[in-house]
Image: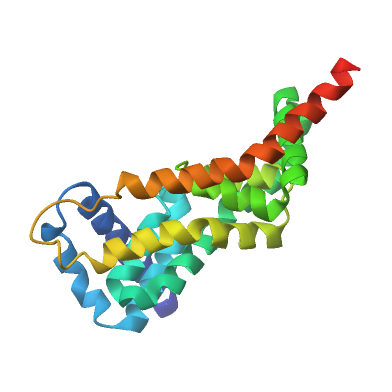
Length: 225
């Protein structure tokens, strides 16, 4: 019972942490970030709460960058590896769910079969690591990328490596926001500078352009023949 109560407590604390960071991001950090200081005072306790938040984040459909914000708030720039690791781990549940359901979905739906088949051909053309990393550089929901990777048959190791590479710039942005939380708590909202997002998206598109073009050409070749 004690162990179960402890897990429930960490889950509730994780919900509070995530909700506070989300509210601070959307509104003003002054009212909410101060309440998180008691967690950050104990690195082990804060780490346990971040781990719980990592586990439940897919259920709440919160942005993965919030994990990096939390890591930056609790550990400063030393939290960058924690943020990257959390963003990698939190990608696994939707990935596994997609892999488990893709076979049944392809049997029941021709649309699913065509989409998964196209994803497989694209992943083969780009390579799993490149496909995942480049797609994660784009400003699209992280869970959508994980689901697409699972449905396209990307293996676990390329998923992990690609996620770490693709999420690293977002983790840097998130940790920077978390580190700056105390400084900007006097006013303003936690925001991501668009000038940071545009270069990342451009790099992602550049990495995807060649494989996407080759995939389209190969798909059209049988029809043209």
